[in-house]
Length: 172
Image 1 (cartoon, rainbow, N blue to C red):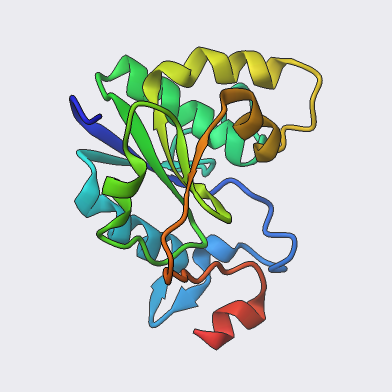
Image 2: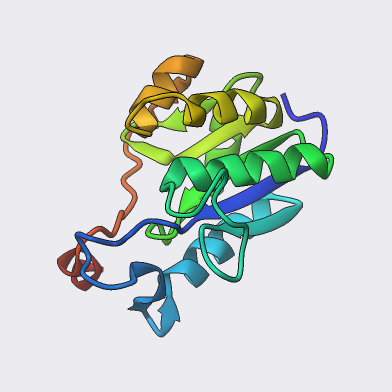
């Protein structure tokens, strides 16, 4: 379980192709989506990093790796700075419920059902993700989840907004 400090990581390195512009900087109630995501995750972690943006942790092993590049950067940061693991959210996820950390954090990697970027990742996975990203694969998060046998948590009744298109933002 939780035997030390936890790093929080907002994964923000995607191309926003379905959104049509940089969705991390899109406004919701006068604040950017990345600010909403950061503010909702921050109370649950000892430190917060942004991954995949110029002012944050660079994707690892190189830029434009998508969510796994950001996760890899966060895992290595966690490992080298004494964090036991990483709680993640996407920059397009403006809400992070207070009940989520307790459901995710454990002795193995865990994601929220149908929300693969809302996850718990033990820091010891850093070198395994290095290996995965250095192999011939499509860098799909699904392939990574299969490789590490991630646990999936279902919280009945929990519906979180995920903003992929401008109309998703307009509905909020």
